[in-house]
Amino acid sequence: MKQSLLFYFLFIAFSAFFLSQQTFAQVNTIDFNDLSNNLDLGREYSRDGFTFAINIPDGPPGTPVIVSRNDGSGFEGTACLYDNNLAEGALTQWTITRNDGTGFQFRSIFLQEAGVGASTSGTIQGFKNGNPTGPAKPIQFNSSIAGLKDYAGDSDFYDVDEIQIKAEDINFFLDHFTYGPPFTPVEATVSFEDATYVFDGTERTIEITGTLPDGASVAYQNNTRTNVGTQEATATITGNNFSTLVLTADLTITRANFTGISFEDASFVFDGTEKSIEITGTLPDGASVAYLDNTQTNVGTQEATATITGSNFSTLVLTADLTITPASLTGITLEDASFVFDGTEKSIEITGTLPDGASV
Image (cartoon, rainbow, N blue to C red; front, side, top):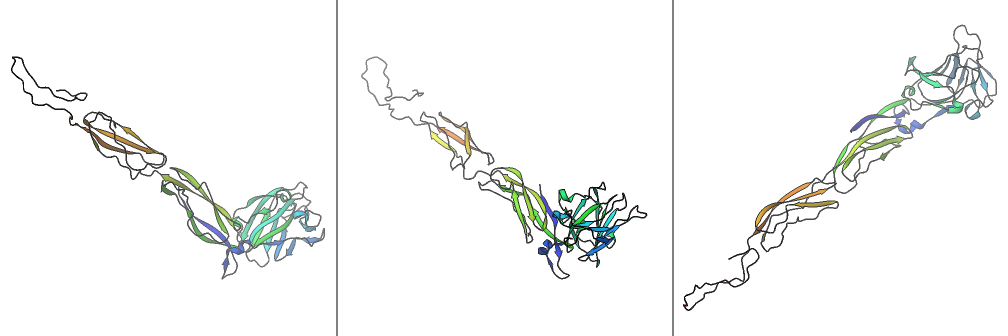
């Protein structure tokens, strides 16, 4: 498997002339801790450059307004805003807008339904210049149990000027609205390529190529191999200011060839003992040799085979000629002899001992 992936590391535009990934972590929070309980704030309430508004549909059966609640209903038991909607279906939308119309990154919010039988879930959507920046997304109004609704990693909210929260019948507490400067994507190419090595007994790994931005780091899993085979290695790139990126690549070790091993022809003079040929050179650890047709005693020639194997090596088959040549007879003499005629047949015999298999 091979993955060479172009991905986006995202950072905040600090100004029109200077971009810094360090500013990604810049977070601003709007809370309502200084408000006393049950203040009538009307249908629009401005705070710290933002307006929080409830939108009443035509012909509502009631007249909800935004009120402050300082009774522990907000984030971590703090004060919050409450829409005070006690009539079914009277309120279907909250809107959060920036007063000067400039963009921002929406990061998170506390939303908790008030437990009076109204909607427990709805949708949330970002807008820029009146146009949606992405589809409406489902949202649960259960922050008291599940925590803040976090959208810091959602690209649909990287650069918005308005947030709309909708449901069929809204009655919830709103608190702890966090935001930051808008995002501008910057491209960074990081790849994690398949790698193949010939076995040499050392541990092999793969590393990413490309430059990680400041604050990002890479962790490898299943990324060391010594022996022949293939495994999938993983590179996980993380950073406090980045979405996690997981890349995979195949790490392969292939068989090595045996080197420095020879199997040479050999010739022996017959002496009645069994002869064989052996390889020369040093076998690496884990390798072995098996011989075939590699013993001969009598005169003649045969092809011997040496097969060298090892779990991390390609099999090597070598052949050589094993030859036994005739020996010379020694210690045998046939001496002149002289006899006086006596009418009988005379002969001469050799002296010495004939080896096994020899005749005269």
